[in-house]
Image (cartoon, rainbow over all chains, first blue to last red; front, side):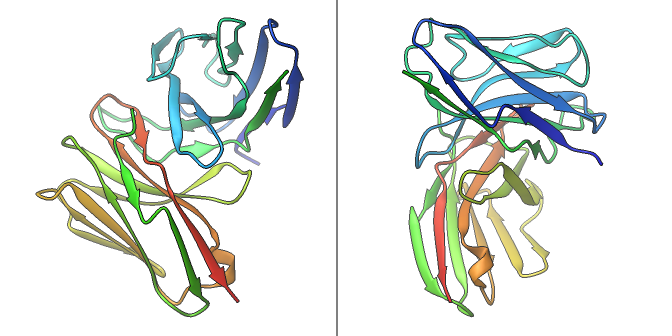
Length: 115
Length: 110
């Protein structure tokens, strides 16, 4: 049963705390991505990784950090420096071939609420 | 930054009618993709059209791409209540990551 899992589905944290969101895939995809979605809005790219031990900042990386120690895993840490962390966070993966981008497979998302 | 902008922002139709939504973008692209999102869920890939293609079909979906106008359209024919969702276009601008638009919320009334 292949796919992408994100946990937990709902997460509540106090302001000033760091929090790590989990993303795991068993699709054998090289590329993984983190997006943020605010109510009624589209997705904004936070970080992405094309290969293990390498990742790039997206459009809104400030206040976030990632690691890519294993092909299957791409955890996202929302730090206390992120000014408005409450949002819906989506992880995705895709195959890579050459320099093109291919269809992305999304996890079910984690809804983070910081109070 | 949002590369793609969908139009309309919201669309309400009756079951059986066709739904058309448009996407405009600003820079040259390698490909353009359409995704669907049911409320509170992850996105599901619908169709990918490459920059050298003009039209593509998949079941009840028809996508067109006009690179001279930097625009794409998604047509859903014979809509069903189950098609109710948000639809997003996403562009590959060559940085090996997609840039998503703001989406069209489609409501299909039974």
